[in-house]
Image 1 (tube, rainbow, N blue to C red):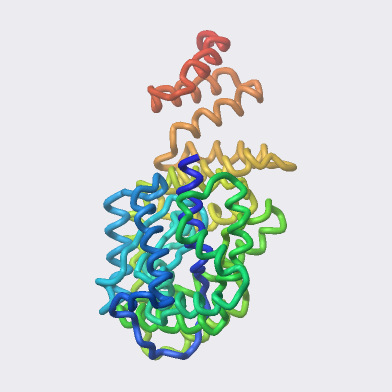
Image 2 (cartoon, rainbow, N blue to C red):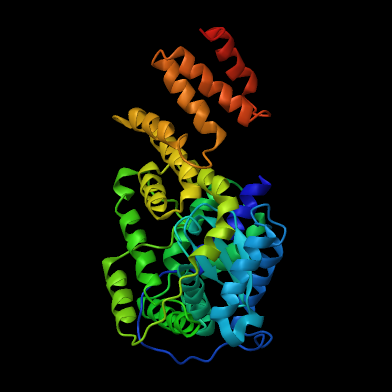
Length: 392
């Protein structure tokens, strides 16, 4: 259960310090610039966070890819400005859209956000929002509010001693904590206002936040067709937030236009297969179909074969109505596009087998084995080929 225990640590922090996006007007705050006084209530919270951070550094969920880490940390540093030295970013292998900020400068960024962000400007909006929570000291303000609630002791123990959490029951407890720790609307507005200013000051396009939130809103609408969202989801979308983002961006005169799309794609491309596998592992297929479809529309030619295959996978795994036919069509299309994965040839071959296309099925399965000589299912595929016999 070690993995579950480490997941509990990561998730409790994301619950305790949730992110959201809404734009407001407050801009001036006193940022933390020193550790809290000993025996203060803030020191209690820092102690809890430091224990959690120690555990996170050993977590199997911690992504250690040096290129991705350097890129996200550099972007966070830019939006943090003078507080760059206070921020430590941990990229966590959790396939949900989330990011969170602890009062001691520990930021968590979940890999599920990577498929939903399109470029560097949108990444900067997410990170800038979290930095806004840090500089506005929202965590300690919420902590002090919590201490008046009867659930405070249980919440403190979960955060401070989360390494000892075990099993699904502990994750159920986290669901109850979400409502206690949730930031107020005013705090969310303040954090986004601060993050918005930082992003624009660095020359990124102010429209990026609205573009990202519009996609999050569309994905939110698919929830009625999927399994319920995990208990640790902390980003409910709203049209109000989207409209606020649009208004804030529209108010800027001579707005910068930098998006950093090529830089972002260069970092993301090697990670796409793993991210897409994890996305489908959520089994929220309506949402995944929307996410992958929109990603495919925005993608350069070199990514279309891979994304078309995974869109087919999403339909195949869901298996509702005419999903099987849609999956087959996407597999057939994927093998005509650049950089289609070997598995696209396998799935297309199986579809042809079921349709009675012997020679074409044989050629497709042979192509799969040629492109994936060390495939785990090689023996199984070879048996199918043996049944087909020699080409006519």
